[in-house]
Length: 293
Image (cartoon, rainbow, N blue to C red; front, side, top):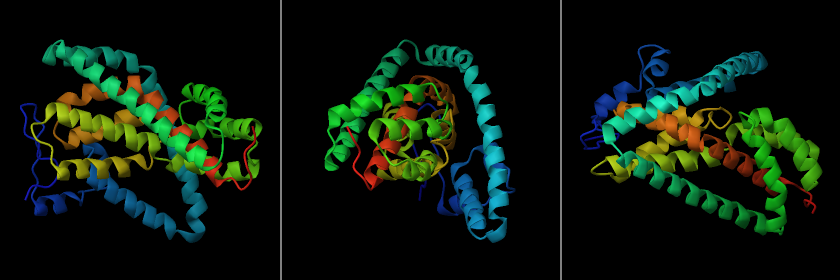
């Protein structure tokens, strides 16, 4: 039995694991191995164990959370440095893909961009339906939301933008500040809309382009990886790059990792904007009082 992503192409996009091999791969040799090898399922297992430990830490919970926040701040700063030099890697990534695939890569990137743009409008339509269900005029809502989204393009992560988003939603949408101070920081950490939608979309387009056969098991496996890796990623700059790199590495397709750099530059900010849009729409739905216009 093949478990994982048994893709058959000439680009080393093939992975075959028997059930015993898959089970044994879930147990890393040490706690650092999943982070060194970027193996998604051991990473998920480690995350679940750590979450379980947090839930039963009792009086040590606050202390452990402070350590996590310190690590998160350090990690965010490191990612900011990486993102600042990303244009250099983009040039190298594009040259690498162009030398291996030729001009056809330009056509493929064009198709990929078209799919992402069209899908963005699908997401906007989805949010519009949710807003209409609350008897809120969609066009005025979107007009007021546009400046908020524009400001979030300039901010690295929804967590950093949470204070600004709270003030803006209170003043522009007449939303209750006390509810926003509870919901917005939490939504910034757990909202999966942009990550799950765009990363899964891009990975499906890559799979369809570079793989001879895509089975339901392939799609389900990648979807599971995207879901779990997105849980901690919406608040991070470079989350698209990181998640794509993990999945491409899992599919033995390291030669396509340059594509992850290109996707991060073109679609990373858009992913963050959709995350924020989902945060605001969800906060509106949870408001006890009607928003004002």
